[in-house]
Image 1 (cartoon, one colour):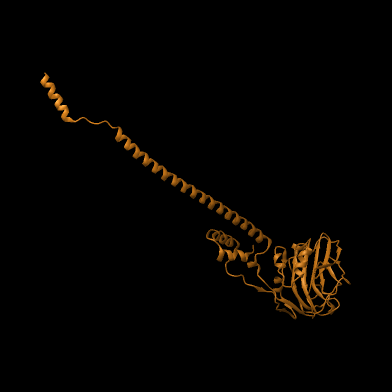
Image 2 (cartoon, helix red, strand yellow):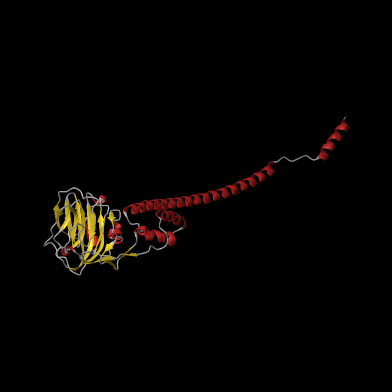
Length: 333
């Protein structure tokens, strides 16, 4: 049952006892009865110049041994090696994602996808890289298009992340990216093909929000990073409920499940108690009827006993006869 359904039950449709229980559940979850506000996500547009980029130093420790990088890309201008994302640490290309198909690296291992797919121009497409158990896989619009094994065990930490151009000191116009990026997220595990297909099925899919417990480098955090050059936000028609109100990650879902179980148990106990009360009420009615009948029988028996006693009682002798007898005895004497 969704949070919205719990909210509706608590605010409008609950019977008295269940209302109390559901309101308690809602308070535990920290969800009010007011409708959750929708938040519209913007995309980022890169002008294609050398300085049109975003650079920062993210915490990459959650992705040290496995990760998934997924994003929507729209190329507006074409260069030979347009860099969408580059994570550079200790002179190594730990993550290298191009908008074209040639270079897609994780831990210094390149997955060349030449001939595997054709990246369109002026059209959105979905792209994912997953890495774990030494296997690097690539997905284009939800379909796996290539894989390879890697030798390096760990993604390094403390490096520089760059969007729109390379993160190292190499300067060349062929690396600049001119186009749009939307909903770039990095997850701390290898996503399944089913999860990736769900993301790729709709640019406004909320699949990413459903994976919030694993989505540790988030698009909304990237939007807050400082930009240089011609990098601007552009509106989209996609909106989601913010994390604070959506509450759809696995921890919240588990809490909802446990609360729902307790509510169902309480509802069943209430039903059983009502049945017991009804049965007890019926027994009391029958007992009351039996007591009334017993009282009537006792009253009848009492009346019969009274009548019987009146019939069996001996008659008293008259006092006048007693005096006469005494007189007679005195004459005789």
